[in-house]
Image (cartoon, rainbow, N blue to C red; front, side, top):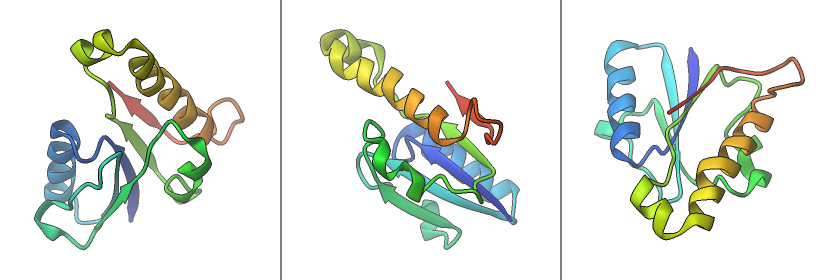
Length: 117
């Protein structure tokens, strides 16, 4: 069983990726994470939905565990919103990514793949 975390799981890209992975693979468990609670595509039992703010690293360990095989980081503030609120854009687009890199073990030799766009 592959355990995959998708941040931005309530958004358009997160939902599309989740649907695709669930369709293409039977041996997958997804954890969808977003600042608003995501919904599982088709109420699939292979999906866990978590409401979490990635700017706070204290709770990342509850979704990114040693059993996590990969993280798709799709959570972001789009350009127009980030330009209107640059501090929020920095916090989400930079700090949240840094928090995820640290939680996945980047730099300590135990990291799991982190894909981000």
